[in-house]
Image (cartoon, rainbow, N blue to C red; front, side, top):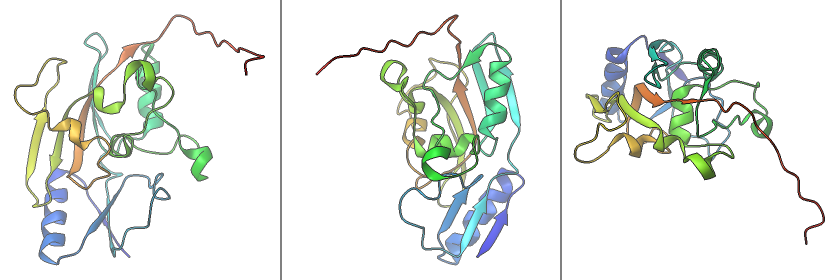
Length: 195
C-alpha cells in the first residue's frame, strides 16, 4: 500500500489530483486510530496527514483554537487544559473500544468521525463547535468555509457537513473550534434501587 505523506495543503491538493487522474480512491488518516470502525477501505493509497500537526492560533480570551487536521488530540487537550478550558462536546476516546493506544487520534479524525462523549446531550456534538475549516475538495481544489468567530455564517454553513463525513466530502487541512471554560467542580450522582 502506498502511503502519501503530505507537508502542507499544497501537497494535499496534488495528492488528490493525482488520485483523481488515476481513478484511485484515497484513505485519509492522521494516526489511524479509527480505522477499525466500519469496513476497510478498498484502496491501495493512504493519504497521511500526521505531519499537518501545528496549532496555528490559540486565543484563550476569545475561546477559539485553530489547528491543522493532523494535530494530536492529546497535545491539543493538554494545551487547552493548561488555560483551564475544554471542548464542551467531550471528545470521545475510542481506545478502549478499538484497542488503540490511549490518547491516540487527531483533530481531523475526531471531526471526520463526528463522535462525542456524554456531554453531547447538553452541549451538542463536535459539529456544533466547529467554526471553520480549510479543506481540499475531491477535485483537488482548496476551499475555506466558516471563520474564526462564533457568529460568522452567511449562507450555507458548509463546515457543519464535514463533521461526521469520514473524509468523503473533502480532506480537512485546518480547523477552528470553539472552546469553553472548565467547570469549577463536577459531581456524579448515582441513583440506586430504580426499576
